[in-house]
Image (cartoon, rainbow, N blue to C red; front, side, top):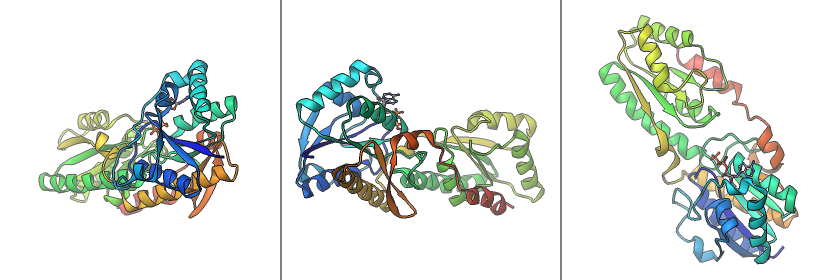
Length: 323
Ligand code: ATP
């Protein structure tokens, strides 16, 4: 292997830059040439590919977002789009790829590998932490800390005004951000897609709180919860318990930005090095991950099809800690 390229794709996540830096510097360390691809699969199709050096990635380890930019590419979902992408890579004699992204990115990478057999290793970059094959994804820890900071602040005002706050956090179909920020923020209730919380459970929790003279509560709602979004749930609760003072806070895209935490920078660095060294060892069509503090490689097909369950301990302690 002589020449590799790196790109970021799908939703951006804090720590992607630290990962790009690690990929570029590991390539340089092992005397490989390294190229950056702009805007994910779109840049691959449009030929927006440029050489990178150790200096290209100076002073980015601490920055959120991605210096390579990211995009969602509809064209890559077509055979013609992927063929254009392959021709651009072939023209530049690129013989290895590092894909930083989430399950959609790896679905695309896996299809591309099946068609062209260009060696590819992935790094899990998504705030959702929904990828099988790694305990944590790059960006998750920062997103949890951002959500936690907001929950702490909302708690102050909830307490001062005796209010019940429904706080909606990101995570798509995964409840990881909700469960970790909810436990860390001392939420009275956490609603995640992985467990079935009924509407009656919500009403019961609030009633029990009032019985204990609890005047304010924080309920963290994962955006993918089956009962609906935070606004819908709050409206329904208000109809049944009209005397409460309810507020909704949707944390939104603040969770995607900001300087990555130490944990995200270190994870991203470790996975970036692992991806390039994996390519050099002949790994392909796999995602680099850290499981039980060990670097492991999991086939893309498993990372995108297998479910990563929330640890039952986390679900259990939510109930215990809210008595
Ligand atoms: P996040 O989890 O943060 O949203 P992601 O990688 O899952 O990140 P997606 O938008 O789902 O983000 O996917 C990124 C890109 O991967 C898509 O825009 C598309 O170009 C490519 N991709 C996704 N699914 C496929 C597919 N079935 N075939 C080809 N390419 C795909």
